[in-house]
Length: 390
Image (cartoon, rainbow, N blue to C red):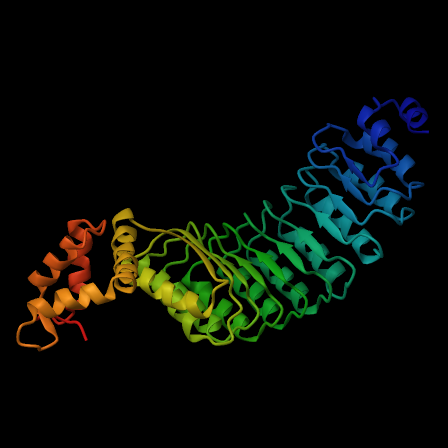
């Protein structure tokens, strides 16, 4: 049937279609099918009941080709995942797809990344999805949404009862649009994964996002990578994280956060007894020694917590000195105490820092000079030149 249709409408058959018909997934990404190829494929797939995933990314389908695909979906009841990314759909294609969304009962995942969709397109999607409960995953990344688009999508989030994964990365939501998105997130009850990579989010949006995190009780992943979030924005977001009990994954890499913001974030996690956070990505932030020490303390209460960060090697080496010293203390406590008492002739339970250095050096532990000096500063925080060994 496929070969006959291709011959009749004058398009070249795609051999991959012949090889994969009858399987659950049909991957036709980057085949240059075009509108006529989509028409031929649609004629066959309207009768198919085995394919559940249809991949048509980067095929120059345009609005005409999408029209044939949508017509096919009116009859096909097996396809539940549809990838139409990079097909130059623009606003006309968005209008056609939105009509399908309004009468959709089977497609649960739609990917529409990189289609030149603008703010006018979001109006169609918002109207179709406000009361929808079927579509669970929607990818609208790499498009051209800004203020008005954010307002439409925010209204959609407020009324939608189905979407669990929403990717809006690599758009350009200005302040007003981003605030509207946060307002929708605030009252949404189904969204679990929200990706907002590279949208120019800054401190102007952080307060709205914080308010949403205080109330939202379903979001488990928030990706804010590659934005304009600084330490001040982190502090505002943290006021929401301080009471949030569902968010598990937070991605903040490639922002303008410093070690100050990283420390604020970690303190918030420590103080929130209800926190669900398990994975924090600040992998482009160079953290300080205080952060490392606090992290070790936090992970005692939250052993599942994983934080990706950058650290200068000498800080890691310094911190390893403490664990080496503690191991030595456990292994050689008797002999160590004898050494300490031997130099503490007045039995004050204190020794000079110079005596401490000599004892550690004589213990033949693999500690260099910098590590020993770091231990001295830790044990002699008041700079009295003495260390208590009680």
